[in-house]
Length: 343
Image: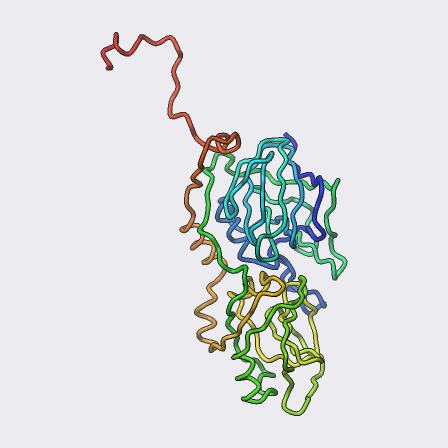
């Protein structure tokens, strides 16, 4: 069997993403990786992976896909309409895909980034320790119809199909923020107004999310700063006084003042906020932030404990393929049960 994923058609921004590249910040390369890291952890729990593997990230719209051999997949992140040969598939769940069947994933119903993960992971050659596409750095490329990707072996092809409770991070909401070294550049009144404001999401991509505001947010005396290291989660105030949350593929240095930093646990919600949805900010202490951000290995353990068997309704073909229907076997020439005294 040939383990491949073939892209028949793709939305405008479908890329391979994993958990990113660690240790390259000093060389000017951000960690990158999935915009919604939690989605890859969810996929790992659904597929029984020991660690998250490289998957397809689909920004806004999916595409049409087929596989060169039977395999298990997981659909996580922003909910998108998904069908297998025309039959609807549940989101936030794992599924068994037969060889040659066509998986179609439509637009996001809410949120921004959906994920198609495969049990054996996408096995493209790693570069600088990761398989993640980072277009801003010239690493990898957006996928298109006709592309074929190698896959790893499914470590447990007979594993049961699973689902997770519905996630609720795709419509905006409140994210927690810790202060940083430049927070004091903003007056107490400005910071209070910042935390009291509901910001509509204006525009976003993998580098950052820009928010709208009727009134600008400026430093006490219009201070500027020298460029210095920045990271995902930092909230910069642009020259127009609008907040911008830096995301996975942000630059590594910047000169806009930062009013604070979104904690890692809430970055998936920020990244998944669709245009027009509202974000609010809530200040927390460093101790509160540390308590809210367990290691990702602990998050994966918690997700494994939360998975449930995927319950099917109806008798659709692909549901039956993923179900264990036989508990035993007979030859067919056994003695009739009433003669054996069994009934």
